[in-house]
Structures are given as C-alpha cells and as structure tokens.
Figure (cartoon, one colour):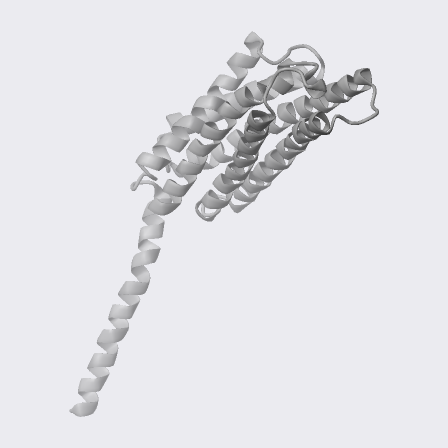
Length: 252
C-alpha cells in the first residue's frame, strides 16, 4: 500500500502544481475584455495555462482511481462516490477549458467579417460559462472532502487532524457555493477565503503526508492488509509441510 499512497500523494500535489500557475497564465483572457480582438496577452501562454488545467483535471481523477482499491475496504459506497465526484469535477472543468480554447481560436482567426462588438460579447459569454464551470467544478471538492474525509477519518490511514480539516471545510465551502448561486457573495470575498482555506490545506496536507509518510502502519486497514498478505504464505508453508510429511510416509 506504500506505492498506492505515494502515487495518490504525488497526484494530489500535482493538482496544486498545475492549477495555481494555470490561473496566472490565463490571466490575459480573464482580465482583458478585448483579448479576442487581439488585445494584450500571449496566445501561447494562455494555451499552456489551459493545458495545465487539463493536467489538473486528469490528476484529480487519478487521485480517486489510485485510492479506490484502499478506500473500498473501509466503505465501498463512499469510495465509489468519491471516484464519481472526481470524474464530475474534471468533466465540469473541461467545459471551461474548451471555452478558453474557443476564445483563443477566434482571436487567431480574427473571425473574418464579424463585428468587433459581437466578438467581445462572445468572449464575455464564453467567460461567463467558464466562470460557472470553475465555481461548480472547484466546488465539488466540498463533496470530495466529505466523502474522502469521512473514509480517512474512520480508517485512520492518516492523522485524524488532516481529514478533520476536510470535514470542516465541506460545509463551509458548500455555503459559499450556495451564496454565489444566489448572488450573495462573489469570488475573492472574505467569505470565499474563509470557506476555501480548510479545503486547500486538507488536500495539501493529505498529499504531503501520503507522499512522504504513506499510510499509518497501525491503521486497522493496514493491519488487515498485512494479515491477508501473510495468509497465503502461511497456507503455502503448511501445504508444503503436509506434502513433505505425506512423501516421507510413502517412502516409509
């Protein structure tokens, strides 16, 4: 299980290494309303940022797939739910990525014959879709935190203080999403910062712990897995003894 923890941990850290730079690299699209008309910004950087978002989505799926074989030992239903929520998160984020690529494509082709005002409206429309996919896609970690946090807390594969962060962050972040849907709050607000902090540190600490420490050896699931691994060896040893005894008896 050490390899499983290592792979899952690296993938969790990869989500941070890809998603954070992606925001800055795509800043020209988000901040410049005339980007589609050829305004400031470099297409290559925006494309690279979108590519990092794709990596973020794929690594998110990878964390769930890597952990499923272990988490199903604790509760198969929650483990399947975790995989499904990660898939939904990635699929939602990919919609926003397509919107960014579409804006870059229209900027490069110049959308011959199109009215500049119309193109600006198109950019705003694509960005509005992208913003909502970002809110909903990055909001899914609240569900992820509840599902995986519950599994990690019950299994004790990592120190319980880590999943507690996720379990605290899940309702907080959900409240911000509901507030955003009803127009009560916005991204970058104090509410947003407070709501996202526990989720941020939950995933960061989980990734670091699994990468450098692995699962706790005294966790019930680890003890159970060790016992299962030892059972075939014991059975084989017993079988060999029986065969040896029978052989000696036959010779005698």
